[in-house]
Image 1 (tube, rainbow, N blue to C red):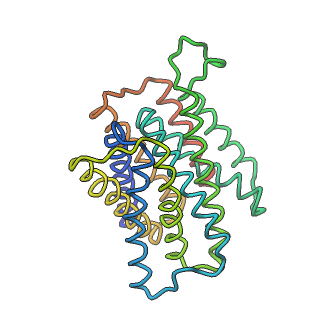
Image 2: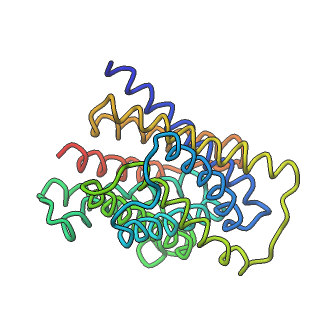
Amino acid sequence: YRSSGLLYMVGAAFFFSLMSLFVKLVGQRLPSQEIVLVRSVVTLLYSYLALRWADVPVWGTNRKLLLLRGLLGFGGLSCFYFALTKLPLADATVIFYSNPVLTALLAALFLEEHLGASEASGALLSFAGIALIARPSFLFGASRGGLDLLYVGVALLGAICAAAAYVVVRRLRASEHPLVVVFYFPLVSTVGSLPSAGFTEVVWPTPYEWLLLIGGVALTAQIAQVLLTNGLHKERAGRAMAMSYLQIVFAAVWGMLFFQEFPDLLSVAGALLVVGGTMVVARY
């Protein structure tokens, strides 16, 4: 039973990494907000059908908090997709998936959940790892070939938004059906990405890009969500999180195969620190 849970989590990690790959591929020509819009519309349809199938009321009870969850999720998704189009695939993935550490910090601040020395140490490890990946010139010198700090900041902002969204989800668990919470994410993202996509030059996708958007980004994201849900039902959160970080490995492989992005030793060391710090938080 447990081994099947871990297999679900491995599958989820694989399909999430494929989603990131498709975003980066289609983002070579299309603005990231167009990608967010298409994914949001498709997943909104999936989520609505799931609600009707389960005969669950659509709008929920705590609508202000549900809208906040949707706004934070939209912000996290927008930042992550933008970062994927600007940063190496593995680096953007590592920075964004520091969000479990940030979730623990925000939960301690807003939900008064306990934050001990172990969790604080894990957070410091993760932030040190991000510094090794980004290599800002004021710490490493201009000759170390660091990433553009603007794009690193966008990826980190996405992680903060995602972490805040998870904290809101924890608050909503007392009053809302999980399918309603899921539904508000693509609902707000669809409404939010319509005007934001219009701020950039609208680029009509080619048939190949439509295939990547609908059959790639949206479909792999939905498959990954289903596998993730099944995995978390059958496995403890700490062990499940360990498997979810395989997507960083998968992302590194896709980066090398499709974009000739070969991580150096500092980037690998930084990724290990981020994963290690997050696992400390998950363990304690």
